[in-house]
Image (cartoon, rainbow, N blue to C red; front, side, top):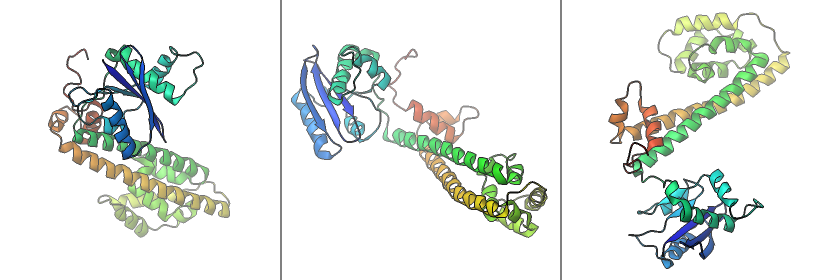
Length: 308
């Protein structure tokens, strides 16, 4: 008898359903995210023929999390079913389209019973490949967050500080540059920026890590900051300055997070055996190579033929 398992996962608990090759419900259960409940799931699978040599396949609507990590140990095939696809299968079992945990677990089990050939199991990537996946995706998320905060800073500067945009917007990296963040923190209002001396600007540029052209850049910034523009009322301008300082703290944090994750992802990528192959592609650096490896994995059996 062939058995199939479906798991409807949720934040607080997970519903489980086991069916045989005729669609008969063999067992159902509900577990939470603790070790005892995981053992209960494994015991339930073992009661219905699960073994290391012939593990019961599992369908679930996610590809990550502790539950998936526990199920992927060994040779078990875990199928991450797209929630949109699962919703279409749900229509075959009822017309109300009402979502329920036990019912969805049964639907997922029946997806494997009827159409397992049409779905691909999660790849058996190595631990290092999974590490690279976590770091590369986290770094990409950090870059998006950094840009969102930078856009908020840009919108705020347009309200009262156009010289700052003129000073940094055309530079590569824009407002996320270290020198831009240091100088804006030093002079969060146009009135304060206009009073900056060449010595102060040079010191700020050097403290941001800039090594070359500090004198010329300091002179350029002084000229830009002393350009005549319309101003908000002094009190309102100071209030905008306080808001800018708060946003700059967020921007500094997101920039640091993106840099730290990029370094960690690059380090892990260089440890992988496939890094040399990926870096041989023209224009492909370590960080982009880590992202590519994160998406394709290193499971050699994932695509046995060019068509797959």
